[in-house]
Image 1 (tube, rainbow, N blue to C red):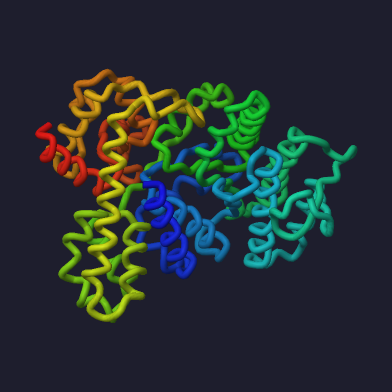
Image 2: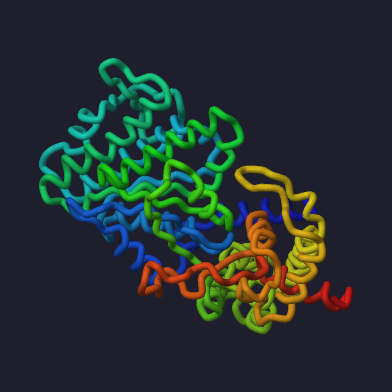
Length: 435
């Protein structure tokens, strides 16, 4: 199964590398509008600390990157810096802070060129913070080469994090003082669940707490930048709430789901290209039944069909579908072996029993789309939470972030298989074993 997953992942990376962000991003108008409203701040406004959650392949990364792009091009107010913890080397707060400062410097430079300030605000900011052009800060990250040169020159992680705080605070002092409310910064940290791995060593845990305290100070105390932490991990928000550095601080919860069927079809047809649209039209119902609105999975299939010979679309889909179902069955079957789910990256050992998993399969298989209220699973709550923690089940709010009127709405009552393919796998196993 590992080889199947690896092969599928390689094709996904290849397909994305051939596609521009503009093509990958598709019609997230409601999410973009909600994000713009939530992050727009004026001088004196409280900054926002938020998590952006949602299933894998739902397009969270594309949403954040598109928002940053629109800011750089002047379509949206504000400045931003974005990092993805999938990137190699971002293993400690010092390197992460360096990458954030580099992205921020780039964003400010573009902002100044766009708005046409008469004075060199970016240069003034760099001087105030203590950034000096021409010298590398021991990492390849960032925009240009620069170093921190405080008096005395800062040493260690704590100094680098202090400089990160000063980055945002100094910019708000300089830019917002002149009434430029469209300059308010936002820090985006994607795949923030990677921070959980830092907690596995004493030094890492200390560094993690230092980083989180720094982000809280930037957001809540100095009110100098919004902070958005993105993750596809079901367990991440609950883990984050247990971190002492965030105790007592309100963290907004934003959820990005898969595309609806009409949008998913429009996206898929766009990606296969006009030459193949008539050929794939008869396949669409089966495609959606297997992949739903998973953008990356739809893109993977569309890319394979687009590059195939005329008349081969059905054959390509059959091959991809077989691989998806085989992988999904293996994933579902693994739930009968909770002992294999060990404590790692903030997760505990698997707590459920094999018979608990049989009950989950039976209930979800018989439910439309596999979606059930958590209370319908007549199992100990900690057993269900453990399944969610280890990505055997997915949780989702009843109503989306863009539809909620009350921030205190109960947003996590539904559970379901991780993918539509796993729901089909559950149905197959129920029939095979008469569960």
